[in-house]
Image 1 (spheres, rainbow, N blue to C red):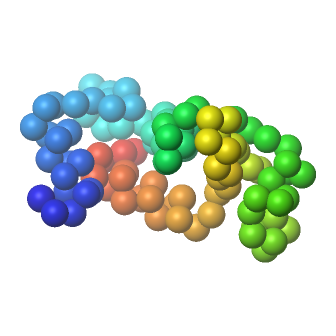
Image 2 (tube, rainbow, N blue to C red):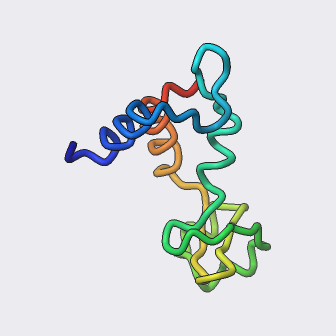
Length: 101
């Protein structure tokens, strides 16, 4: 497969993986899925930590700082994270791939 989401679906199917505590019917729990999805840094895989909003001010776009209350930071590489529109799109796409309920 060329599409990364189709690659993921293939790996899950071929290796019969059960990420995020699949239940008896093989349906994944959305709460567990969302918690795990944004727990690690996309650059270095470090565990993200919640940080006070003021700590993010110099590291995020001005609009993001004004409109967002919760920020996370990777202590290993210093990258900042926040919930944006990309988060919901990714959750939906990955939920479709893994049949998350």
